[in-house]
Length: 341
Image (cartoon, rainbow, N blue to C red):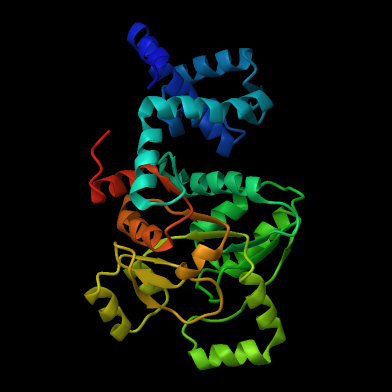
């Protein structure tokens, strides 16, 4: 906290709580608008009278507007939210924790978003979509994995004429259609006015089968070559045993994962908390060792139960920007034995 903030907090201690309440309101409106005062009070856990008072003042200052459907953020309100977030991050020392986690994992950057119940995945997706927008330009190749967090990223992406080519990071299909990498790639491409390619291959094919497909199927080879030219890679992180269940991995492989203390999974690779690779599912596409060759890497995950998985996967990556929520960050801090801030 810089000297000015320390003086403000010392002289006007209530300024911090007021700022946090108004930020909570504005930040919720970023994700869910329009919304009524009563609902806003319920979701922010603030008294309705307090919300009314904050809204009236922020309306006077041009940060929000009130119409029949509810409360909306103005353009000025949209612009002030990240500035206020940076200010409060310094107060809450989140910035310092981001810095320490970045150093401990030896990666490019860690970004911590608020943990906010059912909105956690949505906020992770929103933050990742904002970061992705800064990296995009026509003809950039974007590879994206499957999962609920990547689906949220695609849904949170506004309609923009950035015209990338979007591909699934790997073959493989899951049980939930909207969480499949192929589907997510198509949604993201449509929102960015780009093109997309699909790769319909189940996990678990033998190396010989994959080699034959790459040799005999020009379309699969074309997509595989495109994936290998990825400019931006986006992927989620799962816990090892949960992903093993989801992929219906056999008992023999499960025993290998357990015996070798596998904690995390990403891009079909299972690793322990030190980042050592334990097991890989056969497929076409990118894997954790390939991350080193990708110019821009963004990993996204949330929840304290994933703390060990995130550490293991990012140690295996050795690079990239990691977007996590506060609970995951706190769990990681404890596992990495970083002193409390």
